[in-house]
Length: 137
Image 1 (cartoon, rainbow, N blue to C red):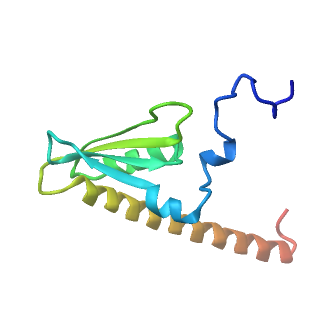
Image 2 (image 1 turned 135 degrees about the horizontal axis):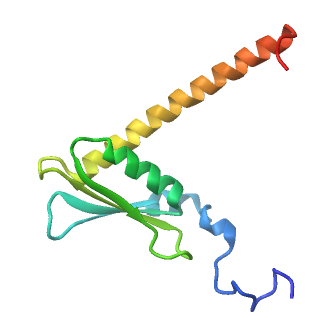
């Protein structure tokens, strides 16, 4: 039996490209991120990121834990066949909401990513200059 035929060991698994790509662009804007506040704690809640895995979950968890206003940040993937990441956030008090610290974490990661891209571009330019002068190999 070839991998494309039904009935194989992963017959119930969705197509791989659907684990990271949206079929409709509008769906991404609608369903990418959702938030559920904790019913028992006003300073806690869970964000669900669709079509994400450990890569973004761990990155956001670490960034959230850098914030002094965050008491707890953790993530989990509910099932291997589900491509969603649940990020649980609890702040130190109810004056700061999980939405505030999550937004700040996203902004900080975006700024850090921009810095890395600029450094990479600068290093590539420097390398090209050295290569033109016969100094790079």
